[in-house]
Image 1 (cartoon, rainbow, N blue to C red):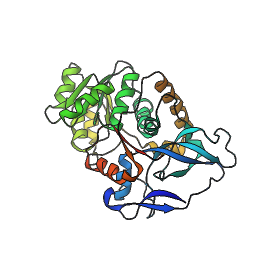
Image 2: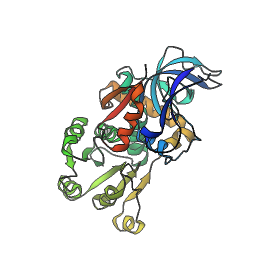
Image 3: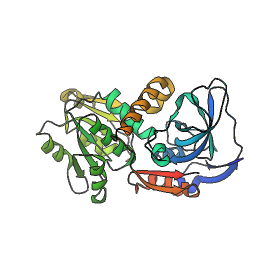
Image 4: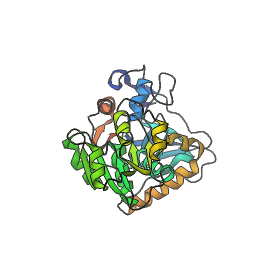
Length: 326
């Protein structure tokens, strides 16, 4: 047996998550059993609880999508992982003391990162790297505009943008978050509660606009980004944490010669695990060189996981929130 958090019905995380005892599974062929050390909370956990995520597991189910843990046992055909090894991995259902994962998507945890930092590296930095490099093809010297730049996804994009040699403009929700985005590496930080980020981008780029826009927010942030995206710019849509899904106007993209690119990282994990593995190797190199490090601002006990995920739902978090399991 093991303890696990389970969504019993769809609704707000604090209302529908329950800590229960469930059977511990054994790994099958191509799988690995991992003892969780830390699980990073993510906005998809909020959407899973609400029944609004791209994937809708049958109720009841265990949420959680990324962890750092220790290999306990391996199934048949797994040769690259061994018991006792510290690893990172991803799948829906890891908010538990143990998790069975597909071995193809489990990798050695970077030595330079703590358990909490390693747990928070996988999804946010993988998404950022795929978004900036594979989808937007960002180039050194370009300008990157990052929305929600003090959040977990945003700070990852800021770090990766700087590592790619870009000028980074971060947009945050209030004055208290300015220093977080700046510490992550943003060259210019805009507090949208007091400033117009469209004007700020124009000033920072001499009127040229942002070559790449990284948008995990949607709604008005997306709409206004189309006003300050550069000629041949690229807007990467990675989520809609603001609550309003982005709506594109093809005629406007035609007139300004910009592209809108969607990114659902989970599809790469499903269809191109080789690219996920290659990206992890690159992120491990960047972590070793000190160029990326998840901004973990809060570590909470396993028993407080529901409250931690509710904080994401309420939009009150800064950086990454990680749940300590062991």
